[in-house]
Every structure is written in structure tokens, then in C-alpha cells.
Amino acid sequence: MTGTTDPTRRGELFVGVDADRRFEGPTTGGELAILTDILAAQRTTLELKCAGLGPELARRSVEPSTLSLLGIVRHLADVERRWFRRGLGGQDAPALFSSRACPDGDFEGAAPDTAIVEQAWQAWRTEVAFAERFTVEAPDLDVEGEDDWRGTVSLRWVLVHMVEEYARHNGHADLLRERIDGAIGV
Image (cartoon, rainbow, N blue to C red; front, top):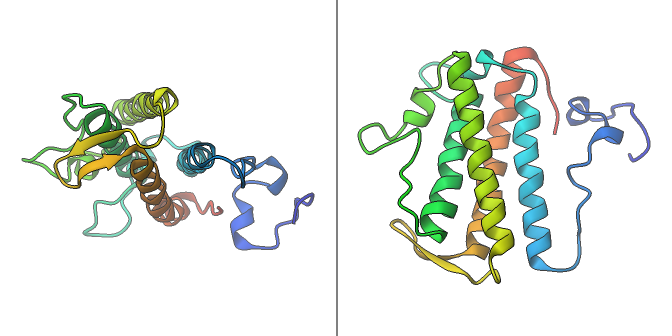
């Protein structure tokens, strides 16, 4: 399919094949390079699924679900924070959008307000930047931290888990984006 812009599959319609550079990273070589590249591609996919949208990011999937693209951005900001700052970094870093009193606050608080959208993106970008910095500065993938749910976790496990987390939510994002404006793709 390389070299053509004529879509032959439904999923190729979102971004032209020639313009999409997300999945051009290494397929052989070191584990760290492969894991970080795949995670970066998943993070970029989330941004792509949300591109060009503002308050409509808060549009819910179907009643009574609170699932929305904005909720996913807020949720993933909290997930990044949990595993990299709290778990591996040992920081006292409570969730930004959810709490014990409101465990689904990341989704329930996703309202169609420009300030809320901007806050979510800023938080997500801040947490991704921290995670990327932490990963680059780690001496190896065996760096460990403590999590109140999983116990001792390694950077390796966290990176694999983050790929899984993004991949799952990017699947949700496909459907949510199509519901908003009909845009589809990988």
C-alpha cells in the first residue's frame, strides 16, 4: 500500500498513507527503542483522533455512558501520572481528575468547556513529558517502583501496560470520533 493515496481500506481514510509516519520506528533492535517508539505512536494516535476538535471532545458515546474523547484524554493524563510519577518515580502525585470520592471524575468531569479542554491537554502533555524524561533517564528497563494495586513494577512492565492502555482507548476513540464528525481511520 506504500506510495498510494487512494484508500483501499476504511481505516486509511483518516490520514493519507503517505502522510502517516507514526509506525515507521524500529522493528528490530533494542527493547527500549521498540517499546518507546510503539508507545509514542499510540500517544500520537490519540492526538490524531482528537485533532481539530474543541469542546465537542466532551460528546458522550451513548447514554448512560460517560465515555468521551475528552474523558479519555483526562483519564490517560491520570494513568501516565500514576505509573510514572507515583509508581516508578515515588512522588506524592495524586490523580488530577479522579479521586476516591469521585473515581470516574476523569470521565464525569469532561464537560464541553474550552477551559476544561485546554486543562486536560496541558495535563496530558505535562505527564507525557515527565514519562518520556523518566524513561530516557532510567538506567535500564529493570528500574522498579511500587504501586498500591500491582505491587512492585518495572519500567518494562509499565511501558508494555501503557501500550495496552493506549491501544484499548484508541479503539474507543475511533468510534467516538466517528460519532462526532464521521472521521475514521487508524
